[in-house]
Amino acid sequence: MSVQFSNFKTLDDYMAELGRAARTAQNVLRTSSSEVRNQAIRNMAKNIRANSAAIVTANEKDMAAGRDKGLSPAMLDRLRLDAARIDGIADGLDAIAALPDPVGQIDESWSENNGLSFEKVRVPIGIIGMIYESRPNVTADAGALAVKSGNGCILRGGSEAMHSNLAIYSAMRTGLAAAGLHAACVQYIDTTDRAAVGALLGGIDGAVDMIIPRGGKGLIARVQKDARVPVLAHLEGLNHSYVHKSADLEKAERLVLNAKLRRTGVCGSTETLLIDREIADVAVPKLLHALTEGDCEIRGDADVCALFSTAKLASETDFQTEHLAAIINVRLVDRLEDALTHIATYGSGHTDCIICEDADAAARFLREVDSAICMHNTSTQFADGGEFGFGAEIGIATGRLHARGPVGAKHLTTFKYRVTSNGQTRS
Image (cartoon, rainbow, N blue to C red):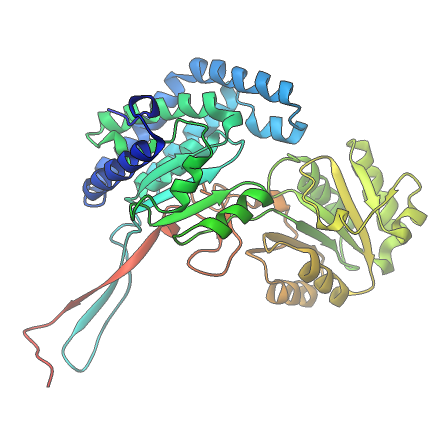
């Protein structure tokens, strides 16, 4: 039986019961077999497919409300579900189930002269609180990745996706129960009361072990300011594609178009295009014409505007903005060092790419750019856990501790040491 807000007199009582139920369920989940957890995830996928029509109907309510609220096209694209996207969500869950079990993996093993043998073993973190905006697929991805890694989770999606999230969550709970696991392994906060977020960030009296936020700059700032438990942050994607003077411009055109326009509302979309001044006379018109043919607005520096008459003059704020729309910033740089400096100044540590045929330039870029994902001749839209072979992701971590880049099931584990001997005592 799920923990529902409507059954409680106060928010505090509701959140406390969510925490208690999550801890009880996770104590069983963390010692469950890989077979049971995988079957639960496959059941989730099966039920999501079976309830596709109901999920689409729920999503239509959210889409209508979103249009009435004036949500941007990028936000509406993130929110929208159809049969194909729901199949994709279910396929992602099946891919998670097929992955190796991270729980119990031995990262290292060794012996010492004192007669002791050591193993560093992967174990679940515990209870994960997930706070996210707009994306209903995160409900399924986060729940499945938590189950795969033996973690309980408490989900808090954005109010703009409430109907969609609850429809997906209902299908997931049925899948958990069918596998013999407690439905409270995955829970969803079914109230839009913002005080629920504060309670989750406070750790619900020690029930929550880690918070993962996924959303805009405002959400991340609030979580990092108010959280009383460790945070694994997913920051905005201020991503760059840098066209080096050695670039194959036919290749560069394909990559830039895909990196910007495949889906403009995803965090892996390129927001700023840097072009080497040495090839600007040819590269600027070629690349920017292709982008404008794709209905992309160009915001360039003064040199770019001089070479491409329809470009708008970019402001300093543009280079600091994750547009999540068919808008791209463009700047000329004199050399590789300038591109590195620009990325270090304006980037968010998410994903950055160099497009070039010079192996030394590529090696230097990959070595010196301090981002979670550094690419060479690759569309930044590949910044996705599924494309990395992780089945799905719970976010792209842009910090430097615990996990970095796409966060899959293995990254939702910590470790413990197992030590054995033949009765050794210490002198």
